[in-house]
Image (cartoon, rainbow, N blue to C red):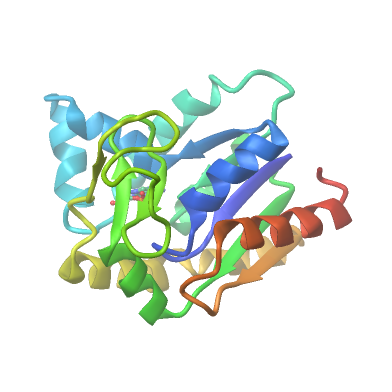
Length: 217
Ligand code: AMP
């Protein structure tokens, strides 16, 4: 299965993708995680990427596409993948069409008030990227990742000001891509989250059920 997981920041893309990965034995390629790794390097590319990410702006397409190509080349042949955070512009979607045939778009819809509440209380594992929330998705031990024991931190772009910009960027530059996949008749799996405290497992079960109907599991 080659899938896109698509939705605004804070809609649960990373949280659900990591759980789907465990159930479906697919690779998850999360562009934001890749950029956060690159940002740790004291390299010209790291500094360039940081300038965009910290302002909630999109990294330029040429950089993104090259990074994606390198990552996709590492997927074992025949193994499926879920793309989280790619494509985010029409240009990226058009480039992806030339690289891979996408079977399904998993679309997450979440109201803005949930996004703001979730992102401002979100924590991420510094080592493996697992997502937690200090209110709604607590780790067993405060500040420590359940999966790998890594330290949890707050992303520098999870601040009220940057969150607003990221939502704006999603509405203007990313959401219009849905039309691209509609026109190509790629099947959609829709999950609408209306409650802040919906457990990830409920969302994942619902997504898996829909993927099954499409014979993709
Ligand atoms: P995410 O972890 O998906 O929220 O991504 C964090 C940040 O990384 C975004 O706000 C962008 O600055 C950058 N980023 C991630 N994916 C892309 C992409 N496909 N195109 C451009 N920038 C991206």
